[in-house]
Image 1: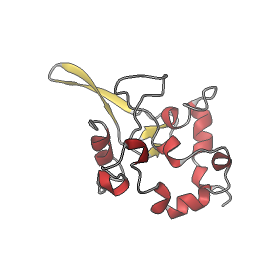
Image 2: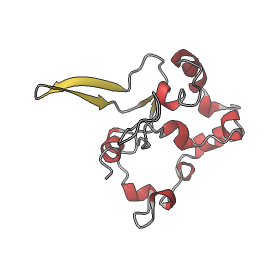
Image 3: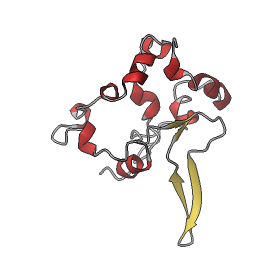
Image 4: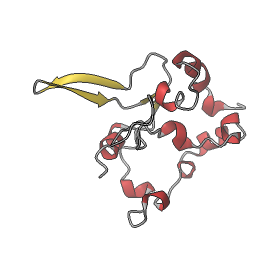
Length: 145
């Protein structure tokens, strides 16, 4: 059921956590979150307070856990139906989130250990490009500093 999320978790900065660190397995998905990002990431939360992003209702998960994984339905060029559990955002405008290689004679596509700006930013900022996103993303957690 969670065949994408667990390998993504292992590939990212939260590899030492378990699913139950943040989720209550006895509740339905929508109500299963028992630990928010702000519970551990105090400095980032503090820097984000008062930012334009916070004022318009953007949450950590919107950028760091975009719906980049497609289980059944693809909603747009940069939008799947499941939130990724990679978390780390690469702010390089030229970074590629996916790479392909042949495995047993068949081409397979894999995700790297980071989310790229097209998934983190351009899902909402549809009329912008990666270069624009890179210029904005690098300072997002240093608001007012």
